[in-house]
Amino acid sequence: MSRRAGSVHGASVGVHASDPANAWRNIARVSDRRNVVASLIVGAYHTAGQSGALNEHPYPLAESLEPIGETDAARLVRETQDAIEQNDQARACALVHRYGELGHPARPVFHLMLSYAVSEDGALHAEKYYRTVTEEFATTRPACRWRHLVALARVTASEHGYTAPGYEQSRLLLNV
Image 1 (cartoon, rainbow, N blue to C red):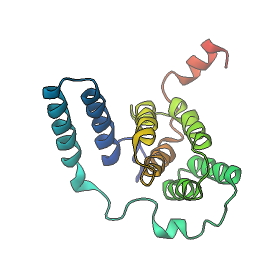
Image 2 (image 1 turned 30 degrees about the horizontal axis):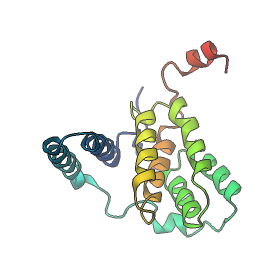
Image 3 (image 1 turned 120 degrees about the vertical axis):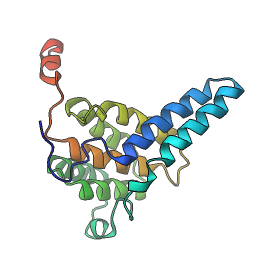
């Protein structure tokens, strides 16, 4: 199946850098001193090695944030769902950013993203990146943690419309 132009389909530079950085950091958490140092060096090298293709300005872009005046948490989540289903990466990012900026609880956004992480084909990254974001959100300092959910919104909006292989069969087998 070919991907549409502009789709990050779960395989953007950020995803490729954050998934292994998360994995190497988790290895470092349970290793001896020698392997802690090696794991952190490899994780940093892997991440830095992909930084050349980053966007000049990170999401959300100012022009995407500007028109969002909504402050109600439930409405922001519904609008995020709509943006995802329209494959509107910029708007999905802006809505999640605004939601977090307003201090709303993260769980409803995670719940929304999980429904797509298991149903959509993110080029083998959907579930893995969701897990990375949940771990990183929990351990990142509060001033930066919403960046992870903003990135997940972008990937989720990108992957929507490409049902994961085996999803329908799984639903049938599980009677859901």
